[in-house]
Picture 1 (cartoon, one colour):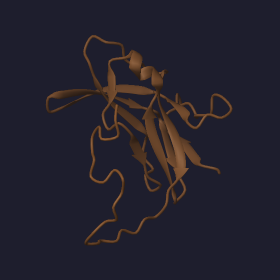
Picture 2 (picture 1 turned 30 degrees about the horizontal axis):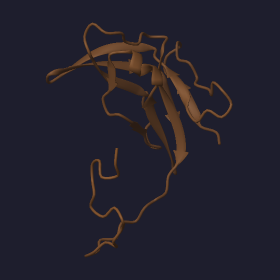
Picture 3 (picture 1 turned 135 degrees about the horizontal axis):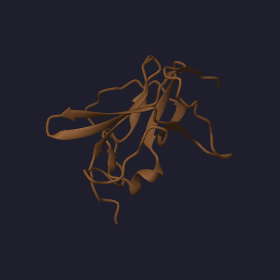
Length: 142
């Protein structure tokens, strides 16, 4: 599958797979900005890239595993890059002061592009029974 990508910044890095079998491609920061909202301060990283994802596919944006070495928490946990969006891909993190963070030129996240089904929801009066039933948080054990 071919996905069109546009550099919005001359420093942007076109992502690629690092190793055979990798599911995601790393995205590199071209900019960093502090964004203040309510009681939180965020660090927002621009990638300088815009994607044209085909209809029927979605880009999922995840933090990299190296995030565990930093004071960053991806604000929306997983970003959704819909096929109709043509703007810059950005990552917004909550930041714990006085801890390590990414800098422009660092790989800040990763993208996986996958197909998704179109779902039709059907409202019913009853759902079928299951072994788990209504068991919620922690109901499947430790």
